[in-house]
Image 1 (tube, one colour):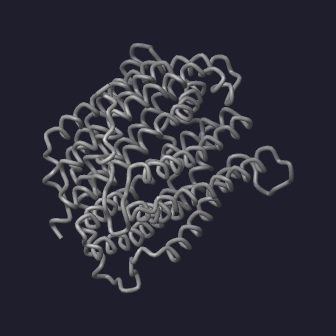
Image 2 (image 1 turned 90 degrees about the vertical axis):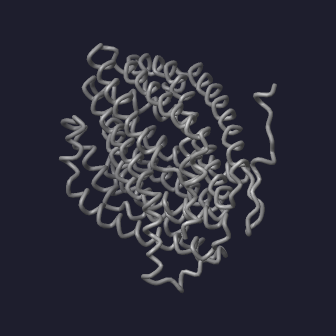
Length: 458
């Protein structure tokens, strides 16, 4: 029974905006991530009625797009850590400076990157071993989505600001509205109850961009109306000096995320060697198991935010115990949820495809994914906790070593060389998750992260 003992006092943090609790942060985080994932699932489900080639193409393009969008997290992650630590320490002006710099720099970066990458779409996607119609579809989707990545980059920055200031429900409202819009547009484009000038993969890409634009407009209105005392009107070029601190804590996390996303792109190119059916199976299974992933990630991000505030306030013992308590919850929930998904594997896969080969491969992967999700539970809590405390270099090094040696190298060795196919890749993914999770837990227990609080350096 002691394993399941829950101490509510650990998850309460006093702030100038009121008392933050784990549930108050977790529920909006979970809801927002669930809604964002539903957007991807809706796209995949709709496209599966169009063709499996379209699913493989858009899934591959989305992975590359995800890697590109990770560049924006270099600034966003750094800003969140700086904001959380300074709010915890009572330095509200420094927190406001970081919020302002995050929006400006992410907006500029996305405009430049979006234009360059849109022009380079075909050679970039060609590196993923995509060919023929699948490559053509992928190029079409990626080119449109990345050209307008400005919308998502700025929306993401502002959402991070609201979360750091204890207002996560606003991001949920925006995500829900975006999901409703893209679901409606996807239905009209794919099933065509009325005639529209949009169709196929290009239509789905435009629907995605329209929903992102709508989300940005909504969250800008909230930013203007909700009183956070950011005082942006008083900011100037000198305000951007805080970027140095933001990059100091943001770049390692950004490099880690970029490395991980790049490794996922490479893993998809390895799977592509096995054929279109293997790519489609990986995408279908990933869409389903993400609903296990989303719980642990939401709890990890919530823990990170609370630990950022606690670290800024110097309450390290509470932060330490909160981490270990939430780790137990995450591992238990991941185990239970992944078992449930495995038991209902066939009807869940049947929502996406009727191909017996894909359903059979997918069911086998879901059994192996139980191990992946247990290991992932360690990563979601431990990695986010270390980053929240400002300890960002160690997770970066471990992540890069693990994702390229454990995940990619062993995906090729087990999946291709030894002929285990997708099952070999999933075994490699489990090895990656457990290696990283164990290394992060050892670091957390060492308490070296207590020396990394950035607010003390301002």
